[in-house]
Length: 122
Image 1: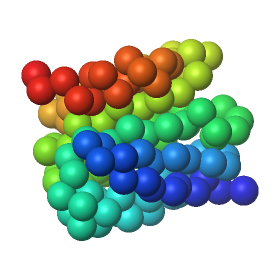
Image 2: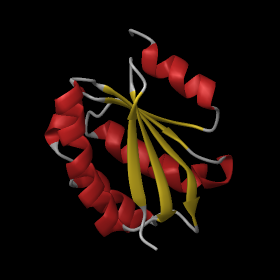
Image 3: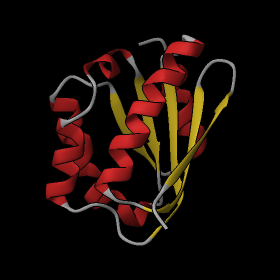
């Protein structure tokens, strides 16, 4: 089953929760949906919770392709990706690629740390 996304407005940030098996096509479709929700709520902080995603994470080529195709409007969105520590090696490549393009993004395995970083005004 491809990955699906639900979005909740938590007041000071949006929580995007992902479920299913990750793939590049789903990632690109969800990014387009997410930018619309960000604009509707005028909220520029997003907690991306990937802990319910099953299977392996995208490989290097798909991670690069996904990161390279992000809408430039995401440059103004602070994003914390929350995932299990076992996936951090693959996630770190994605994080580096995204940050090198100017997107304010970090990877976390602790929800409270992710939220604290999102809400930090720095």
